[in-house]
Image (cartoon, rainbow, N blue to C red; front, side, top):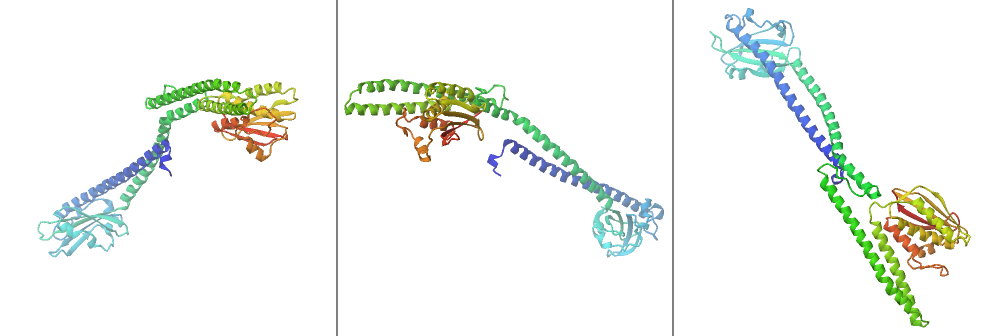
Length: 458
């Protein structure tokens, strides 16, 4: 994934979602640990209470028993075999070996694993309970609390042990963890949905700026509004300044082109008038001056078109232009017996100035009428993407593929008997390319030549 090209919305959502998931996972771990610790502390509290009861019972016992039966823990579970609650008491000798022991009825026939009871730690613990784990008489996990006490009349300590089945405690801990995970997962889903909504709402003004800029490009607006959020106002203000600067540059270019045209017209006209003689020098001057005039005309038109092509927001309906030009050509070539008529013309909008599309279509229609035998047809339709396509067909002799290539070159005239300078198709091609479009020549369904214009549309 290219992070540099990742959308702002995805960056914000992914970043916030990852951070939220990490924090929620960390929260789940911390709460689970805290719950497990608290549950274990509750179990320790119950075990310590049993140890306190055993300590009182041991203190009141006579020398024949370790735990006074009347003072032993009264919880019914200690009297039920394999109930999951157990107590034991053991008298130690001076070497720490067990001399005698007693236990609750719940111990039943358990082969007591004294080595798991942390007896040495309890003896060294100065009366503080020591905790450990073992496997109980019913093969269940048992949590143990062990404490050593010194009874009156005894030189060696007595070890008191109580244990509880860990499965209920572990089950409560697991249930809490499962519930916590489900709750936090739902919270994560809700947070991600809220993040998506928040990001979409937060970035909505940017989408509006995009739409408004697109409206400016197609001519529906001339500048951006001033009612954006304060964070976007500097951006929109700079865009408006850029639009204004672009307009001023185009206006200056048009003015300079016009001034240049006027400045060149008079000297060229003077040269043409002065070269009216019949000698070879006058003929050379006329031909060179004519070439100069044609070049000036070509590049002035190209410069004017380039300036107009840079104007944002220009838009021209195609159908009225075609109707006006076909009507004009019909009048001009009516005596030649040429029928000029629009064919199927869709209601399209050219993204450019009317003057330019008139220049292109006028040149193509004039060429078609010059070489047609009886019929010229214009078709306008939608093209691929944001383009429109205009076909000008005639029933004339047409052109071979090599002749079509030559016809595109500036100043080339394939038929020297026809009037013109040979600049028409070159100008059309240049104009179309200035609008990021295209111009093609091909065989016409009418039998002659088809000229195809591809231009940007709205």
